[in-house]
Structure formats: C-alpha cells, structure tokens
Image (cartoon, rainbow, N blue to C red; front, side, top):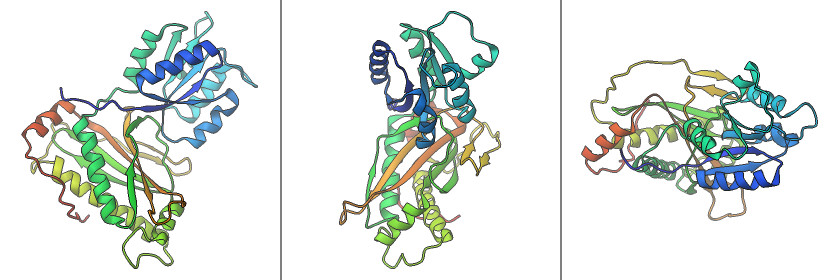
Length: 321
C-alpha cells in the first residue's frame, strides 16, 4: 500500500456541554477534522454558508428553540442527506426507525473509540496517495498560472467533502479514466468573481471588456481542459482500460445547486485562491476543484502504476475537446 495523505474534513459541531465540547475539540484535532462550532439557532444557516462539509457532530440534549436535537437532525438530513450525522446519546430510550435512518452513528458519552471508528469509516473511507494529491495540486497550479499568467495562484490544504452542493454559478465537468481510477474532475467558481478577475487583468492581454457568461464559461472550460491534458500526460497510460466499465447517472438539480454522482464516497477537494500581487487589497478569485472517483478507485493499482511510470512532468499541452 502506498503512502497516503492525511486529509482534513470540515464538520459542524453542535455541542453545548463544556466538558464534552472540549473533549470533542481534542478529538477533532486528533482526527484531522476542522471544526465549525455552532448553536442550534445557527445550524441551518451554516449549511447555507458552507458547501463543503464532511459531517455533523450533534448532542442529543442540545438546547433548541423549537423541537429538540433529533428534530434538528431530521432537518439537517432533509437538506443535506449526504452528510453523516454523529449523535452523542444522553438518553436511554431507543431511536425510532425514522431517527435511525437520519443518524449515521449514535455513540454514548465517553465512547470516543466507537466514534473514531465510525468517523474513519464514514468520512475518511477513501485514502488518497500522497504522490497523487501533491501531483494534482502541482499540475493544477501550473495550468492555472498558464491560463491566468498575471495572477498569483495559491492552493489551500486539500481536504475531503461529503457535500454535493455546487460552489458558485460556473462549473465544468470532465471525465478521468485510467487503469487505477474512473471518475470526474470538477472546477467551480463564482461568475462575478471570475469576471472581476479577468477585468483586473489576471488573464492574457486584451481579455476584458464586456465579458458575457459564454466567454466566462469558455475560460473555465479551457482551464479544465489544460488540467485534464496534464493529468492525462502524467497519470494515464496509452492503453488505459479498467476492468469495470459500469456507469451511474449523474443527477443535477440547478435550483438547489446540487449534483450527485451516485456514490456516497468522499470527494477530494482543493480550493485555489487567485490574487493580484499588484493590488493585494482586492478579494481573491476562488476556484474549487473536486475529484470524484465514483466508478473505480484503487490506490494499490495507482502505487503499481506510479512505481513503473517514468518520471515525467506535465507538458502543459492543451487538449481540445
């Protein structure tokens, strides 16, 4: 088994007991979970503000203005059914069938060992080789610097997400297929921020003026194509056919900005910040990259491929659709 990257994930923490709150903060630090502490009042609003969560930690006796914590869990589950909810039990009566469908894992106070096992299984169920994660970030930054030569490109720390909510208004999707994987890569960004970045001069000379949405789509599409070309050159051998050729429907709900690839597995996510070094006070352009290996994923086969492949970096050659 190849070395794997210890990735983080964001979790919504809904806990009111001071002792348990500190214990869970320490637990999350050990597990690589980035904590968003909130009250019951703020919980639903936080779902709207954060599109890249990995799960929810909820106390059963959390004070709520209306209903109780299990009612809040049901509300969260209706809005984001892909998010695993980990319930700290404070009562002895069994959960109903409906509640059990809402809760991914119920654990008793002090039972951090069972919580650890459940978090590892539910949130970190896929392991990503370090060489792959570092390589994807490297070739993506290189492609973005080629497409946006006057911008400073910085990649945040990669993490995994269970959310299926799309960031921004402009998204691209391209298939990835090799001997060790089958899935997709997405780029997502906000239309206004992309337009503003181009007007600031991030791109090539002469790119600006009255940019309509089709031109913005084209810029993000060409960026995606450049990343895909570099990925293909580095990670896809000439005869890349997996033994599994299954397909699953991709479901897109535009009204709710939701996309599903038919898999509950976590997705690898990287946020890139493009800023203007000449005007550091301006807000950066955020581009979110997701890799979804929903059809075939074998890090062991990647390790075999990486060990036999010759050392060759991406060419930066633009592949046409």
